[in-house]
Image (cartoon, rainbow, N blue to C red; front, top):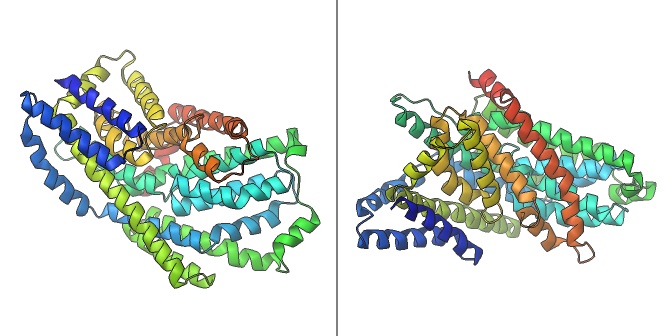
Length: 461
């Protein structure tokens, strides 16, 4: 009976490969297997009675209220042309140096990732804005596509991101479940704010490694990353001074991100309250940029509604999947598998990371967060793994998976907006150095978990 749970998981992956909607695939496949199991007497239908409580729990979850607010914030900043203005300002500041456009794209991608937190949106936005400019200025397609894909995936790890909000909520439940399984009936909690604080240092390290790569590349192959000419800078400035560009393009979004993230880290606001601040601030920024029109507002609200509906529908489908998976005894099967694994905790972590990496080729972070993490996280946490460290490792692991050829999501997003003159092979070659950088970061965090746990400990004790 237990192996039916693994067959069900395999069937879900196969059906998703055919392009069916994720939420309906999870729910439909689970109900079909539950019906088959009940008809042959190996599944207790009473497990499905818990579904209404699960759905009510999703509706009543205050933490998840941050999702539509952060989505709204990112969509509004995108419509207000914040990214375009940021890229122009950074290009003027750094474009006179070789590789300066690459550094500009990295910094703007970091700020955009902190604003949107959605990989697809960041890659598409940066691909449309910066790729034509970089190619026009003489940058190699390989370097240009690589830096855009890499910075576009920073939304997985740079707080405040939607990925960390969802992951933090799931890890919180998994951590409490793990402690209850261990006989601890006054369990400690892990909040989204803890995960945000834990992601700050790894995120800054990753961005610094990207910037270092840009500098090294400009030294080794300066002809592939030329500096901007005086005429190029004049074309970007359009009779505006550098101070004016900085004040209008760089300072406002920086202040907004500092206000959102700072209020969470300093304990002034919960992630949900800070998301409300971010959404309000994005409206004010759009008003400042004279982009707050009824057309833009309607487009932002439509986009926010679609993305939020998708997230919560997947959450409900994943809840049904986890109930049926547990009803078949899949959780016990996975637990016994990990217990018998050679290498103990280290071996279990390696296997989990490898599975999540491979699933990143066919599942988005939302599906993996809602389906895979609730299955494996309680088992790993009951083996003594730190929940914050595990969350950050999963986020960076998924980020690496989204970059890896030939199935990485970021590669597909960029391929969809890049011109036909850019070869797919150039995109694949361009991301390889960044995959290596992220693997190095994973090994560094595995060796020194304090890089994740130190800041939350200092802030929250």
